[in-house]
Length: 399
Image (cartoon, rainbow, N blue to C red; front, side, top):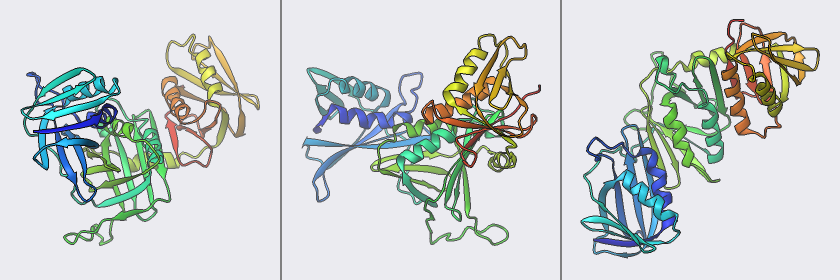
């Protein structure tokens, strides 16, 4: 038997962090077990802790909680319990803001504020070893990494398609010390990077070098991760402490304190270089610059009579751009700064609005953004400023 007390908010937070990796139950309502390991008086500090581990065959999550008032003859106990039922119990008791008494014996009993829930114990689960050495590792501020992932995963295709379009490509450049990422749904694409970070290769005695056929060591490591998994993984990452990002090509490991997320990389081929080349070749001949909220307001007017997402953006004098549909029933104008030669371009309004929404979530709505145009047959770029490497492009449609 293992009995302990824990704050309900601490219990809820620890369980919430592993929810992204809880497996789906089968037709019999089983198969969704997670692992809970309890330790009494660990190390010199004598702290007692509980560690949760969940794995759903694509992502593993590990979280820790401090426990107290432990009553047990055993120093360690490992049990398995339904993840979905545990999550429901943690959420319910978390709302009560109380101290929980949890007893693990032939079942897991959770008591607090006059209520009690008993969960049956399950069987052992498959899991990934979180302590295996990685090939590449980098460290950065957590907030910067979360914003980087949120931006770079803004264009992946929701459903599985060809060329890994449901994925995000991540590249570790050891020579330039840059972490970059891109995603695309075929109609728009995004590129993001974090420069000037320290990326180091973890040397192994068994395979210290990883040269290519020419004998030159590869300084760029590129991995592919399913977009919805990556986006979900960063939602529980917060605070000002630093995060460590590591990979061995087969796994992407995110570690923030005692919280660990391990994502299995995808075997789908993602055209990282092709997407980057398209974006780099897309030089803006002209730029419109206007506040996000003014552009969104103009789109709202345009949408009143919109039957198809066919949007013409057209120059109107030296200080305005017009939004107009194919039927020309509605014209909305935006006052903007202009630079270079610009005439017109035709876009899918939905893809254009999605791109704007990404910037609206990152900045205040009064922030000015740049819409870059080179030719009506070439992609349109959206970025914070003309020199910014972080950019979304939208492919034009037939006019």
